[in-house]
Length: 153
Image 1 (cartoon, rainbow, N blue to C red):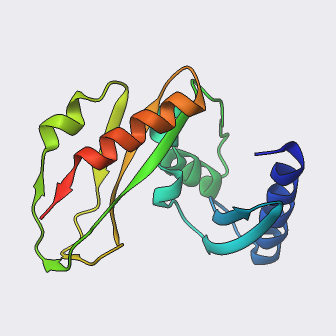
Image 2 (cartoon, rainbow, N blue to C red):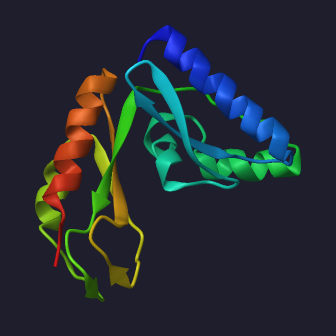
């Protein structure tokens, strides 16, 4: 992501959260298309897109949210680069079962979280794989391997 696109994304996120007001974490989801930043959604709470903090930062998004609401100090100190990759359903099914967990656990420097949703729907986010590494690129590769190892049936 270019410095200019990152600046645009930060400006858009700030404009949205300033307009909403309040305390705590706001997950602002944006898409990048070429040289354009496109707003997608905002969550006025911790969100799965921010779970990467659970593996990369001194404080997770959950701790930061609570501390911000209580007026306590927060830290966004990065411990190491990381990435997340969504675990999506490819089926429609009530009470899905998760398989191949052993393979997902073998991917180094990763953790995963399953959301426990009772219904799987094609394309629905059912969990997230988190990874850290020496670079964001390597972390992305690990997170993707971990996420794709989990099978939903």
